[in-house]
Length: 324
Image 1: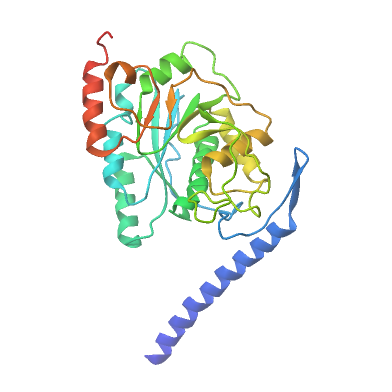
Image 2: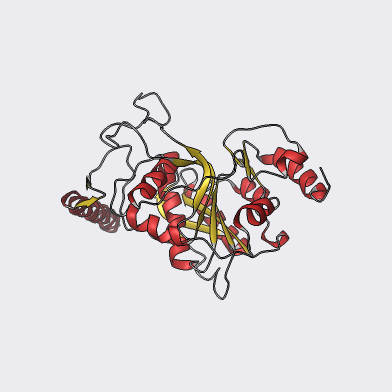
């Protein structure tokens, strides 16, 4: 009995050692690799605030056939916590309801590995995926600092499993999203699909936060320059689906940083792809109070979630045909 116990313990210990050894070997290879792009050299390295990348993350939950025999006009990929079932239900029943639009819309939720009650949460995620077919998961921890990995997972999924799409919207969970306005006033299904198109609430001349107390702290070891390239704020931005593969590919070369929206801006800068200016005020990284006529003429408003989002959406959808 003791021998069996010790054998089992040794086997588990040996597997851990093998996993650690494999990770170290992978890290050494990354450290040896050095790429130059746009005259900038990017030696790979490890830093506590830098997500491990590139790294062979695996899809644990996938919807590989979701776009099969389809040409979606819009993919909405939503970054959400793995445990946040209620928020996913709220989005499915409001702006994420694929069935209410007059173009083909695909909704996916991007999650990582649960941190709390991991076995139970993982089981529930798999059951939810079976029920709704909209969960995408890879084997990285679901943390704020891994939001870049989550977004790159979405880019990888579009590139590999939904390249037939025309456009993609990356969305956070705490926004009001006017899909009809986005589709018909910004993207126009009757026009040819644009390539290298990326738009949202644009930030220019952003300075990296060097204060260690900041939520967005970015040490020089991660990003040495004193100015970030222009980028679209994270709550919601839109891009042509052809960019998903380009962004995913360039992310394999350059240094990944934990600030997801700024990192995507860096990718576009390295690709020499400029941001497209939307009409002012259409993407809002701030909150303003609900007004039907205002909300009919915007794409996003930040800081709407839960019951408030449900209430606002119910009124908006019921009255969206009313004249202002």
